[in-house]
Every structure is written in C-alpha cells, then in structure tokens.
Amino acid sequence: MSTLSPDKRRKMESALNQLKKHTVVVADTGDFNAIEEYKPQDATTNPSLILAAAKMPAYQHLVDQAIKYGIAKGGTEEEQVDNTMDKLFVSFGLEILKKVPGRVSTEVDARLSFDKDEMVARALRLIALYEEAGIGKERVLIKLSSTWEGIQAGRVLEKDHGVHCNMTLLFSFAQAVACAEAKVTLISPFVGRILDWYKESTGRASYEPQEDPGVLSVTKIYNYYKKFGYSTVVMGASFRNTGQVKALAGCDLLTISPGLLAELSQDHSAVPEMLNAEKAKACDLEKIHLDEKDYRWQHNEDRMAVEKLSDGIRKFAADAIKLETMIKEKMLNVKNGK
Image (cartoon, rainbow, N blue to C red; front, side, top):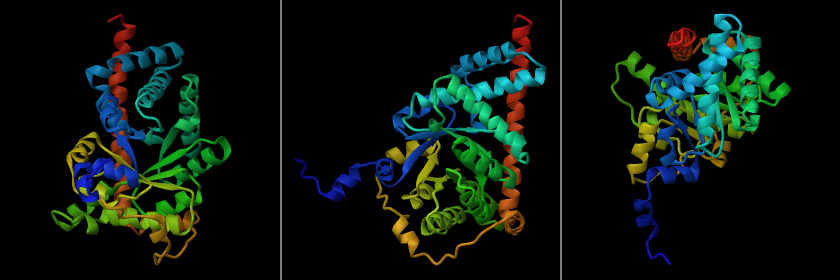
C-alpha cells in the first residue's frame, strides 16, 4: 500500500497524466511514429502536417503506394492526382489508427471550403477509402473548414450519412454557434492562431494563460455548449505553449503537437480542472440562434476571425498545392520508369 501523500504523488505525476484525468488528449501530427509514447486517445491531421510527414524518408512507401493507386484508377492527370491525394491522406490515417485506440481526423481539401456539395462528395470518398481498408466510419472524423458552406456540409454528412465531422479553422463565437445548431460531432477552435493575431495587432509580446484571447474564446464556447446542452463537443487546437493547454484542462478534448506533449510529460506542476460542465451551467450567457444572414453578419463583425479563417484556408490550400506538385513529379517519374 502506498504511503505517499496526495501532494507528493501529484508532484511525481506528469502534467500530461494529470491532464488526461480531466480531458481526452489527442495528438496533432501526421508523424505517427512520434505519438506512441504519449498514448493519446485520438489523432488529428491536416494538409500542412501531411505535407511535412510526406517529405520524411520514413513515409515514402506511403507516398509511393498512393501514387500507384492513383495511376491505376486512371482518368485525367487531375483525377489521378486527386485520387492519389485522397489515398495518401487515408493511408496516413490508417497508420495512425494502428497507434491510437480512438479516432483519426482527416481533412477535406481546403480549396473546397465554399462548395457544400463538393465537400460532401469528397468526404464520402474518404470514408469509402477507409471502409475499403476495413475501418468503419465511427473511427473517422472528417475535417471541414468552418465556413457557412462547410458547416452546412457537416450538417448533411451527420444527418444523412452518419459521418462524424470535425469543424476546423474555427475562430469566432458565431462559427461555434452555427456548428452546434448543425449538430456536428466536434469543433476545433484554434487557440494559438487567435493569440498570434492579438499579439500582432496589439504589439503585446505575451499574455498570461488566464487572459490569453484564445483560451478565453474556447472557455466561452465550452461554457455555452454545456450550459445549453448541445451534443457537439469542443476540442481546443493550435497551441503555442503548455500554459494554454493547462488553462483549458477539463475541455472535452485538446489536440496537442508532439513537441508540447513532450514538454507536458516532463512537467510535474499541478494541473487542476479549469473547465467543467457544472460550472458552465452557472455562466451568464444567453442562447442565440443564427440563420445564414445572422451568421455572416456576426462572423464579419469579428475582424480577427474573418482574417484568420481566410488566412487558414489559404495556408492549407497552399500546402495542398505543394503536396500535389510533389505527387505530380513522382507520378511522372513512375510513368517514365524512373
């Protein structure tokens, strides 16, 4: 029987293990070899993370397999590249699912962010590829940009197809309300990118976690969801430091980069629960409803959110184009017998 006092036991326990008592910890990476030691429940990817991983020698076999698949599917060069990209994203997802017991998030091309029907079609293609590999849709979250069109695509996928969605690039309260009303499974508000914008626009070098604009945004969204009983859950994302992570202990899920997971595993400071559903019910928030015009107006009133959403779409699209360019070059080499 242990004779350690609770305080001493806590001092020996890592911040990461303490965090896991309050929150589902998710690994934010395409480098699936980097996540095993941290034992996350789920993992998330995006075009930028897949691009970085696809450049690593350890993952070239996945790129090569996806290219062979794309060529074998035939069609125009554009169709072959699209099929290769889908296969590559799913191939990384399949490998990640060997390392985590829960779900993987796989993102729909950001260049479709303003086309509801195309987002739905691409999402269903990704799900079909997972199912061909023996993975049911319950282990996959489809990531969609939190534009109005993306949110409505999420509504259709959830309601009509039973596909679980992870709404990404979320920066405004209006986006969060619209996602909850669409009854999507999960949202990913971007803590770090919100902080980036405020630091740049104010010239302020740093914020304490309890006054960090990204932390405050996620806290408000979490409290709103819990107060009014929405089924959509909140997964804080895009962290810049462990202080932000610890300030959101108790959030439904937090997706964290391997670098910050490593820091948390070496940190032995206390991690108290900061958010919980009972406290949320006492918050001074009023329920609101947003149709399309109300959503567009309220989102437009938040300059930070407008700028970061458009910037995020552009960056993910740019990395998708870089990945396509790499695939086209490798595809040409394969076709030429190199």
